[in-house]
Length: 304
Length: 285
Image (tube, rainbow over all chains, first blue to last red; front, side, top):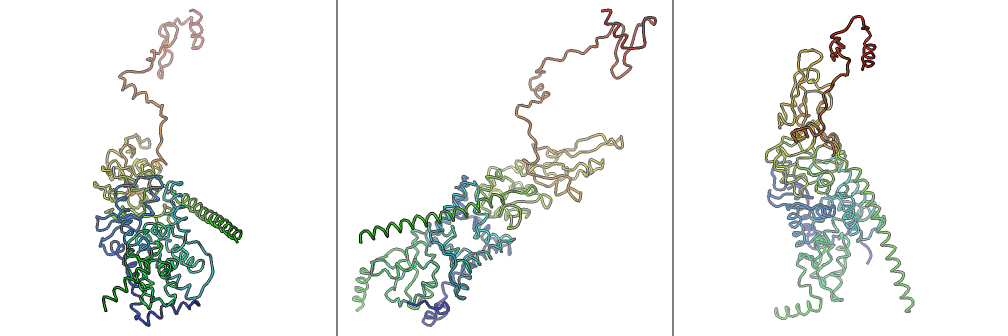
């Protein structure tokens, strides 16, 4: 399969389903990302306090505390016993992402994703190749380093560096030099490494992957028999390695659910597929192909 | 065939070890960099004060998530989060006393909202807060020391009369007036910063600084004699014996007055030289 020009990716889907349906999940995702920022900004800008604080810790409607798991982990590693609010808060956040998919944070909430998506779009559009390559497991090493660093220094050392919290806090509380972080991350993903930050390095992505290990909401390659090998889903996916087992595993008896927890549930594969192979669904009923065939044969028999 | 397979697994094991070591070194190096940077960037400047109830600085940096909820719940908007480029540890809350001190709300709204306890929830009486300590830092410009009436710091103090008192001293310059010297008492000062904010000078002569930078400490063994005496109800050392001069008969000594006084001196035997009188007296004994 020859690699397609980046500008051609998604054309088939647009032709088959129309523009809106080919960008549905991307648009919803941007709406969510900017919506979350908007909710946080509504307080300081308009005095409407639906949510207070920032991604590190916040208070929803003055009642529900939320605390970011990576921050919480650093606190524990630094040797501090957090107060009750933080414990409830981390349970709320971790519980939510445990249900909807850990890395839903990355693709639907995190403001850095907007920057890295733009960088990736430009990089591919301009045909920039090469650069540094990192293992996708690096994020788990980074996570271990962050925790270890907290334990050694006895403080949340990584929070001095964390682009995610720096950017979000910068937007909500005053930018200062936080824009330099935006530029750094953008240039890194644009020139240095393809999908370098979110897909390879970010320790928050690492922890959210672990949290979403068993999350019930998953993407399913339900109609994988209809796949025409256009490769568009691989081209747009930030974690393309997660697609293959589900999409191409029918013969090996692998079920159609994308079970890898690195999948961010961004839904871009659903958008870009002209054959409607993918859909959101549950991780259950992940029956292998033989069972599926029997089931579908039964169904068609009933219909006849 | 079998040999080849063995070789290839060996190679991949070797590759695995090399890759792992490379990753570990790379991440370790980055960690070292972040660690050193964060350590250097964690120093709180002396003029930045933490909100009430803040844990000791080291623990505070371990507990504060930098969420800014304390900043949001401060009704007077005098708390700030350290922005990138500020010299305050990134994202942590602080205030500058000269800009705006803590108003010492009775319900301390900034403390219970802290999700982690970086601001200690045990603090329920704002008078127990110790955000810093005031110190009259410049006696040359404080106009009270010049003999002028000011007392603004004394009057604005939320723990008026306890944290700052006015000590009366004699005005040597005029010879007949008093100086009303503002004096800080650490057992009552909350470090709210209102005195520094209110000081009428162009540059405040009273400052609120982190306690550890300015507060002295007596050695543990140190005892104040007069306090011990009051506690025991009597002196704990052997009482001083009453002082007396060893003078010849008929001679007295008036300290700070006339000096030697000779009550009954035979004019013929006497000399005007006091030393010779003393010598003579000793010789007679």
